[in-house]
Image (tube, rainbow, N blue to C red; front, side, top):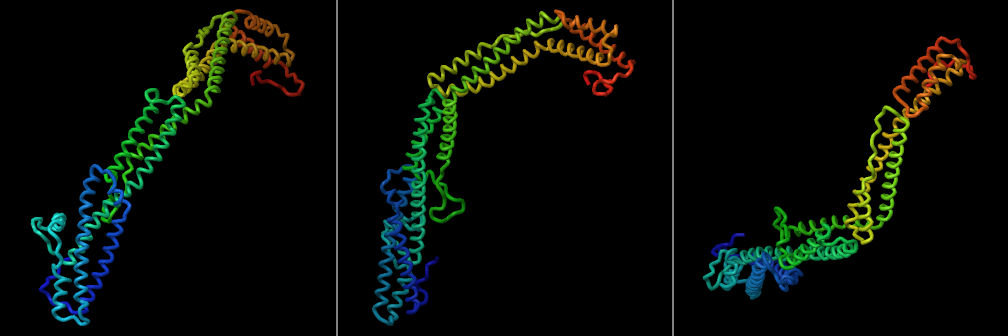
Length: 443
């Protein structure tokens, strides 16, 4: 607001009364604001804190601004009191009184000592070399508003950070201690497990963060974009949030280790059972291979390998980890072993299937031969010489050792073809169910 030219028209009594009423209301509002700032919890904390960094710089400037505020306010109060005294001399003010009031209310009639004015020189463009500086009441109010806004902004920002972050850091630190104790109980320690190293780093970071927040809160204040209101912004919780997420990750890791501790015995017993079944299956495959080699000729029988000793060694290591409560090492080992054990059991079963395949082929040929024999018998053709001759030949091949599967397969096929030809030319003989079955036994 621009200063009024003191050489302008002299104010009349009504103008003086209105100006005094407005200035009185402004005086009351400013006094209320200054007292509130004086009693603000953030200001009291700043006065008693050992500050560093940007907060220390800002608070030094803010203390000077608050002191200057009261100096301006006292000058403003004195000027207003003087104006009121002049107005109260007479019910109807004389022209001399009105001239004096006009000068006091509109002109640069408020004197501020040079030292105080110099402290605000960058803002007020005052000359620091002067012994005193003169201002109008309007200019003085503007200056007080500016100083109050910047001072309150600094106090509110510091108080907001102190109100938000230290308490949250303390809560997180308490949770960190509980997690650290739990981690130690399950063997998760620095230098032995990544989660233990993370806990140690989080502990250092939180301690440093709390120290910095307490001594330099403004370093953790993020001003709102485009906001000019005092205290417009929010505490910067970036570091805190990052460490809280890191602690949550560690907690999940500890939970996984605890789960291992609770289920370790069952899982180890289950692993022993799976590996034992795999060993028994491989032993059965080796026995079956010997039987196949003795009973089946002219066929390739795969070699059956023995059980891998490394899995048994790892299982012994897992049991050792459990006995010594090294849960953090047991957890990944069990997960790996469980997958490997299932793979080993599957391999053993596949080996048994591959080894016994020739016996399955022989059993299938035997079944097909007997089925066709039963078929021709139902039609009264069991004594057919050709069929009898071919059946006996195929039977000798299939029930002798070693069995030549390729020759036996050809013999069964010849018997099947002969039976089909005989059944195709023979008169129809109804079976017991009265149906004429001309289908092959495999149908």
